[in-house]
Length: 356
Image 1 (cartoon, one colour):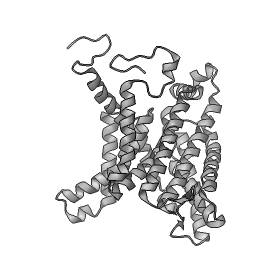
Image 2 (cartoon, helix red, strand yellow):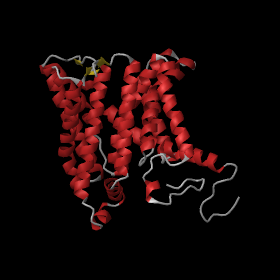
Image 3 (cartoon, one colour):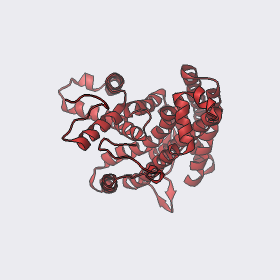
Image 4 (cartoon, helix red, strand yellow):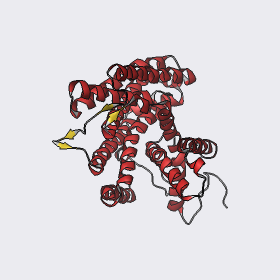
């Protein structure tokens, strides 16, 4: 990747580096330090929000792989999160399974669902594929609702905190470091996957699958593979969400949750893993920002009580504004800001463009 400052890669070894320049090394060190110190100086509310962001990053990165890089539309994300959470709840409640059993079991269930519901992607595209993946949500919701009703868990399945290395995760600070490590691992996995032959094949399929197939890329195999990988990651995020909340209820995995994750990849910026992170951060913190504004601004109590409606109305407005005025999302804004400081005090002009 060439930067606005004139930095170019000149050999394959440079292409494989995750951290390329001295400035990036310094920035990464500062970021690691800030993330490490954050739970030590922040209130519990802020740590709880950060934990939600880390879980959302895993799910958003999975959807970004599928939609942003492979071009496969999916509206079944909430169903996959529910599948991972329900698998965790059922295994814990019925068999007393530990974290080290429920986590891989959730991943396997997610992979199988991705395999089954990824098969239509071999023949369907666009809206037809989206409707097919939407069926996944209703299937999982029906199965989960039937289980909760028949077993008498109408208020949800309670789950005890997981134990990792004999240490129970009960405090927000403890969860923070574990979820941070998992989010970083998920991002590194996605970034490295995209740097392989598989990642290049997925982007070729996204741009034009017929041309990709004419070049010898096994399009059907890669479409099915990315559905399985994305579904596996999403179910793992559902497992983590179940443990973090301490209970599982199918009502928590509505279509609104799918909309949230679609918004993460759109607002963050399609086709960018940084966009998945920024989108998750924006969507998770947005309701808290709106709630804070309602407390500060002189708004009638009757309106302030309609918090849910106000959140989604404002959320919909923000999505429209991004689609109309900033289709590249938060990543596009970040790149312009970065290039401004890299080029300062000079102005950035188009290649071959005039001065001014």
